[in-house]
Length: 253
Image (tube, rainbow, N blue to C red; front, top):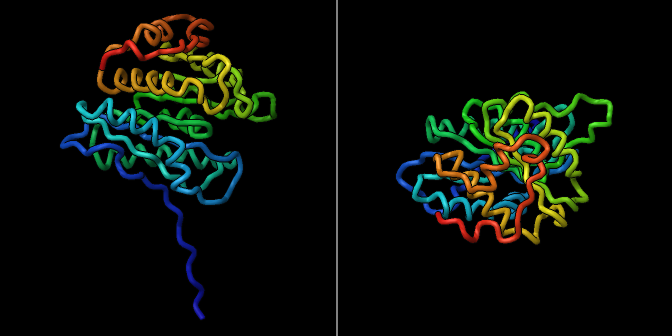
């Protein structure tokens, strides 16, 4: 009896969030969280659920601009050390966005391990910006090369992290941002005081910050004053910018 070939796992893009427009002028690729080590296939429903709310908010805000928002479905749940599978899938997704929509700017928006994937894949030629929310990053004290940052040169980068995050150490994202800022002035980082990994207490503020950043980097909208100040301020000020309660309520889009 002939052996049945094992199907090849492939990353894919989920359906476009929000109504489809006639022309796409910019793309957001949503990168869900994952595990440090796992060979299992992610659940598409659970993965999409973790980023769908933010994706819909972005899709609604960018509808008139021609924004396409897709969730990236990974081949595997795990980063898996040097294989960096989630980062490779993020780069594939950027390639796929170019194939579908042509020469349009791409913003990688990642959460948790997806935040690490967004930062790592940020050097893709189609990517002009990275939004990394509560990124899981490896401990810099272990005997391994530090997380790279040179690929972020020429990109606008925003990191958001809760100060009470017990899953991913916020100090590690600060250190990465400080290293990236030395080579790229367009790096900033916001701290959400007293919030945890899921940023549940400031969910609306984080979503408003994401909208502000994405519309600015993809379509040239003016950034809000806090984002402008964070990008312009030298470290550590621009890398420890507090996200104020109620951020976004006075912004007009």
